[in-house]
Length: 245
View 1 (spheres, rainbow, N blue to C red):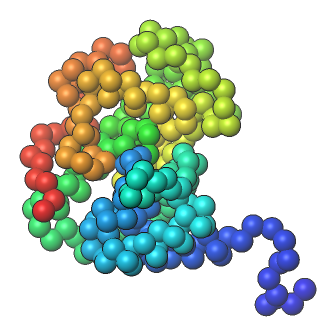
View 2: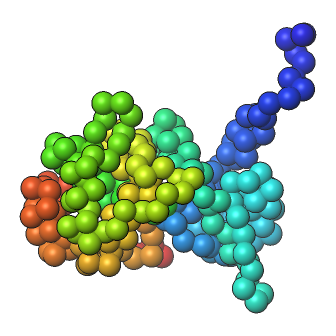
């Protein structure tokens, strides 16, 4: 086969890469890692582009399978297609070079630090907090990395003691390692990671900061992580949050 000829069959990796090669589309995918559904207008405002421009980019992302959409009345909402897509975006972000320009304002720098400390990655915990929880679960024998990441029997018991039911078997793996883009170390994803994140919100361990992905560990959460994982509050320092204009 001529080296310039494309294969007739197989995955079109170049087409997927082309979807994320545009900065606006990449920014949309990063924003959608918060797990919420966004409108085109919200994403346009986030990326600083016209609504018509955002619509064109979103059509490409939906057509390429990275996003899914739903309509409610006059409004069109988009979200990441599934957890696998979210983990792909997070992993690519961890491998990508850091942007050269530092935050230009104190509010931007504050938001950046808050995201690095603790955030959601689609439906599980990430940042320094997510990594610390994963490492503490490993140290306590709740997770095993010997032959790929697995939840141990002690881990299943630990979840039950917290009141977290073992997620039902689906195509999604119970546990998965997701490389954290700020820490460059793995945090816990998969169905168990999602269930643990939901529990943290429901039990008041964490709360969202503003409307983005950043979360803060509450006093209740600090006590719970120390009681259940022996985890000291090493990942959190007080942050004064300034909402984006």
